[in-house]
Amino acid sequence: MGRYLRVSRPPARAASALESVFERLNTPKGIKLSAPGFNGFDPAKGGITTYPPGAKENGGIFLHTNPWVMIAEAIMGNGNRAHEYYRQINPAAKNDCIDEFQCEPYVYPQNILGNEHPQFGLARNSWLSGTSSWTYQAATQFILGIRPSYKGLCIDPCIPRDWDGFTVTRLFRNTMYRITVKNPYHKSKGDIALKVDGLEIVGAVVPVFADAKEHQVEAVIL
Image (cartoon, rainbow, N blue to C red):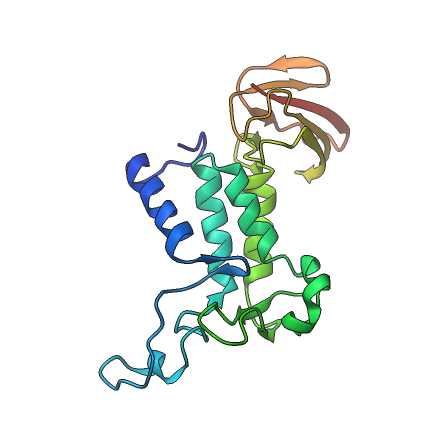
C-alpha cells in the first residue's frame, strides 16, 4: 500500500486486478483497452464494432490509459512492472522498429494497433494525446517517487530491483534540491532513511526551506 496515497480497495483485490491487466491486456507494445476485439459490425454494440479487432477502442492500445496502470503498479510496490509499462510505450525506444511504428520517435501517438490487428505496432494520430503529461507524472512522482506535498517533497521511489539508485535535481518552492537515492538492498520499494544537508530526517518528507538556496538530499531504500 502506498505510503502517501491510500489504496481505496483491499490490496489483494488491487493485486488481482493488476495481474489480470498484465495477463489479458498487456502486449510488448503497450496495454490494450479491451480484449478480445469484436469482429464485424453490430448495431446493438455500437460504434466500437466499426473498427476491426485491434484498432482504436476495439482492442487497440490507447496510450493515454497506460500511465494510470504504471501509477497503480508503483502504488502497489511493483517497480519492475511499472518500469516495464513505461519502457514499452516510450517513443525513444522505437528507433529500432521505426518501420513498424511509423511515427516520430520523440512524441507519443494517440494509439497503437493491437496484437489482434495485422499491423500490430503501427502508431496512429501522433501528438493527439495526453499521454506525455500523464507519463511524466507516472515516471517522476511514482516510479522515481519525488512527489510534492503540502509539507514538502515526499521521497517514495518504486523502481526496478536491479537499479543501484538514481539522482534527481528538483526545483521546488524556489529551492533547488539535489537528490540522491540509493538502493543497496536492491528492492523496488521500502522504508526510507533520509538525510538533508547531512542531518537525519524522521520520515520520508524533505521539509520546505523556501530559501532560494541549494540543499543536498540523500535517501536510502531499506
